[in-house]
Image 1 (cartoon, rainbow, N blue to C red):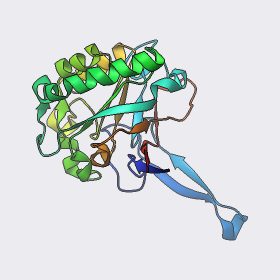
Image 2 (cartoon, rainbow, N blue to C red; image 1 turned 90 degrees about the vertical axis):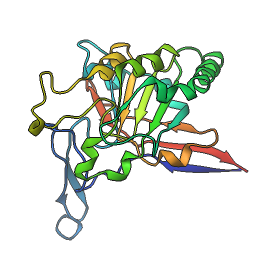
Image 3 (spheres, rainbow, N blue to C red; image 1 turned 180 degrees about the vertical axis):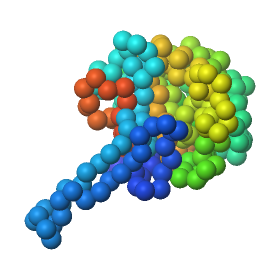
Image 4 (cartoon, helix red, strand yellow; image 1 turned 135 degrees about the vertical axis):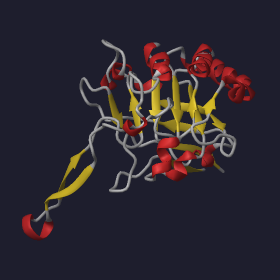
Length: 239
């Protein structure tokens, strides 16, 4: 028996997509082997750079911080909803688009609760295919969930929603004269307000559409922080 591990993480490098207004990313030499005898780089990034997790405190005053998230909520099986080719630029993903996976989501939640209790991970990962535009201007024009669709997912017992876009909410750029607040954060409010989790900027979800996979979405343990970059991956046992 061997394990096949699939990387679901965008690479942090000079060409990447950052949410408007967030800190820029830089990874530059600080010590070098020729000069100092060892290599160390200085890294500048925000808590929501690249593939990352949103803790409830990202939007909810007094909500759990990233170091307070139980590990049981971050590793487990996931239902992958494949909408690649079915959604387009700035298209709203409503419940009608997700309903075909309702029974699968219910069954996954039931199995997890039966096996491990309600504190375990009940993940839904949404594949839009928009990760193909990572690092390009088009990436900001991603499809997004309606707040009603997010609430319907949560009602099934799901505790984490992941997506291969910049946000499950619409992203409005400053040049688009976004009204206050800056865009509609209804999905963030619904999910994080319920004490649950959001993962953004996933990639390669097409590799785990078929079969049963265990997904790991572990963040850095940063005390008091509202989110963290993660190294997302998935694996299954193969004969």
